[in-house]
Structure formats: C-alpha cells, structure tokens
Image 1 (cartoon, helix red, strand yellow):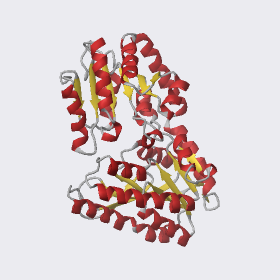
Image 2 (spheres, one colour; image 1 turned 90 degrees about the vertical axis):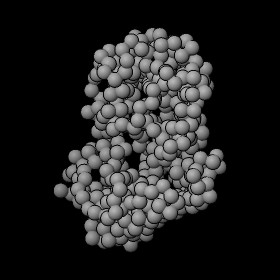
Image 3 (cartoon, helix red, strand yellow; image 1 turned 30 degrees about the horizontal axis):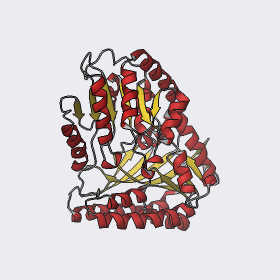
Image 4 (cartoon, helix red, strand yellow; image 1 turned 120 degrees about the vertical axis):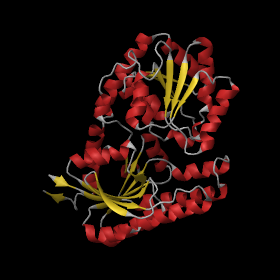
Length: 412
C-alpha cells in the first residue's frame, strides 16, 4: 500500500477545529496510514513554541500574542511567521513527499522555495478568497485598520495568483465556483480539485430530538441559524426576514448559534433585533463546541442558511448547510451556487431568491407543514451520507494526492 508523508503549513490554529482539517486530515487520511505533520500557531495563549502529537504525525505549535492592539496583532503575525520558517529544517530532515500550504501567503513563498530546494511537491489549499476578503473589509470600513487590511489584500492577491498558484504542482479549492473563479485568474482547471465541506459519519446518526426537546422550548416553532456572525454575512437580512415570519407565525422563535470574529459583528445583528423589537423572540446562543451546537440543530423545526450574494461568498462551500442536512433538518437557503445545486440534487429543503419576502415565505411554509419538512430532512440526511461523508471525500483527496506525488510515495 502506498503511504504519503506530508508537511502542512496552515492558517488553522492548534488544536484544529474546522472539520476539513480535524476530520479529513486528522482522522480519515490518518486512518489510511498517511503520515501528516503540521506547523500551526497556538489558539490559546502561549509564550513558547512546542512540539506535540496530533492525528498521524507531529505538530510544531508556535507561540502567539492574543492582545488586541495593533502592536500585539503584528507581534502575533511575526510569531506565526517565525514558527513557519521551521519548514526549511523539517523538509531538510523529514524525507517528505510534499509540502502543503493552506491559506498562507508569505510563508507560502517560503514553502515554495523550500519545495524547490528539497525537491518535494508543492501543493496549495485555498479554502476562502482571503485577498478579496481583506480588500473588501478595507473598503466597507469593516476592518479595524483599513490601511493595513488593504495592504494585506493587495500583497496576498499578487502572491496568490502570480506566484503561489502558478508554481503549485496542484491546487485544492473549496468549491466548483471557486475553481471557476481561480481559473479566471489564469490557473488551469486541470490543475485544480474542488473539495467541498462534509461531515463525519458519527454525527450523522438518526435522531428524533425535535420531538423530545431539551434545549429548545416545547411547542414553539423554532427556526435556527448556526454559524459566524461576521458583518460580511449581512445577518441583519435574516432578522428582517424573521420579522415577517413572526407576523405570520406569532409563536415562532429564532435561535442564533455562533458569534463573530469581532464584538461589533454581533452588535450589528443585535441592533437590528432591537430596532424591530424582537428581543423576546430572538435568542443568541454563544459559540459552542460542534457537538453541543448540533444538539440545538437537531431540535429545530427549520434551519436557515442565508448567504449574501457577494463575489466574496459565492465561491464558499457552506458547512452549516451540510450539518443541517446531516441532522435531518429541513433547510431554507438562498440561491448561492453550491447551496442551489445541493438543494436541487437532494430535495433537502427550499432554495429561494435572496429577498426577505421570499426567505420568510419559505420558512413559514415549512413551519406550517411539518410533515413536508420531515420528509425533506430525511432526504437531506441520505444525500449527505452518500455524497458528503468525510470517508467519501477523503478517498477522493487521497487519490489526487497520490497522483500528484506518485513518484515520491513509499510503498509499504
């Protein structure tokens, strides 16, 4: 059996929480016998770097600075970069088949140079259009330091599309839409593989929590949103849509499970709740571990996935949609490219235009027809188990990785 040895430099922190790292790499690819080492920065306060075991390999965990001042933020980036420079010594000593860079730019250049020096494959994984994100935040005043955000966006855009992706032996992206967007920047389609978000099979077990609620109130029609509250998501849209739901179904409640990256993100949503006098009908639940958050999902009547139709978000692969479906919940989503395709293929819910009236009407129709909602939820769950379980996704990623580094794989 062929076995890969890969060094990954990622923007994820340690310990990784995103399922496309913790499950796809830490569980599924590790279980297939591949050795994967990591260079990550600590999520928790940490003044000194250290080495630990995780998944099927080791992690070189870098120190961090969690302060909010500009000096602290710059210090945090400097500490990350210093830790990521370990890749030179690791590639020199490690006998790796490839170095993979995920959503890193300056250190991505270092990894590219190191891959050429030590003759290993260079793979890039792009999960989000970060250059465009920073540029947008600098323009809409969403950034705390707009000038710094613009500088990062411009620099990262040049590095990504003019240096890193053209030089990569292969590129993994988040969705088919992102694959098309990156292709428009001059990167060949044949060089890219789309790897959408999935779920672990363990969390996809049948549940009947909606009928036996412990977290949500019995008898109340409950709508739920799970995910980030970042301003770029424009969740004030959801609050206005829910106001219309409330007018048709007065006893309905909206649960929002998650938080933003900055305090002002949640404040923006709460302000809209207050403006519409919905404080008694909208419940904010703090950010929870995935296992706890999914308990709320399982008890909801309808789950919602509104995606503001900006170029920045059109290429994403919505995790929440797949998690809702895995928990057999009926979904109301707007016509974001991947959401639309998944809803049409699965029959897991209703996909409507990004308009408050359309979104509200879809929610109301499902609240008033719980049997239809239940059927949609079951269809969604079957679809996820057949197409979006991480065991299935891992097999496709493994096949592509082996193809890219086949001349450097060790046969055991």
